Image (cartoon, rainbow, N blue to C red; front, top):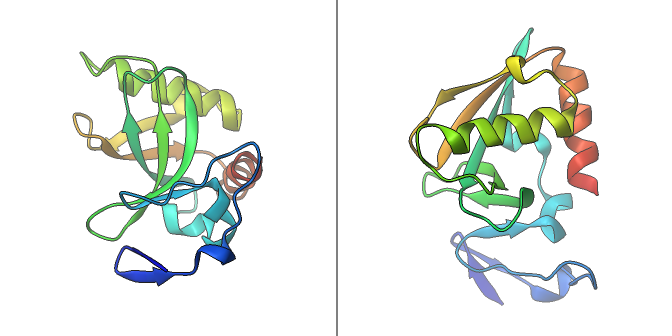
Length: 142
């Protein structure tokens, strides 16, 4: 048993995959745990948009979604790494470009609503919420 976010977790429930390591330290919930989390835990829906809660790590070796992370306020967030540096909004622009390409929406439909200078951000994605959620689910299943 290991403690993660004040809960005891049985290691045998979460098998490691050969292509993705299982890291459960520092409150990080990796893709091997994605099936236990609901996509709705990292977003809020509206009629015309969704708000996606993310945690961005700049200066990474590549642009990627690394899984889920739980912040200190116990809110689940999508963990994203980008190569851009956190200077003059470059990392924000890189996140927007990366997500727009992944979920196949125009870059102009994604805006940073909160946390523009912080790692924890709230992104608004304008469009059909059902289509956006389906795209995110497909991305997180791969």
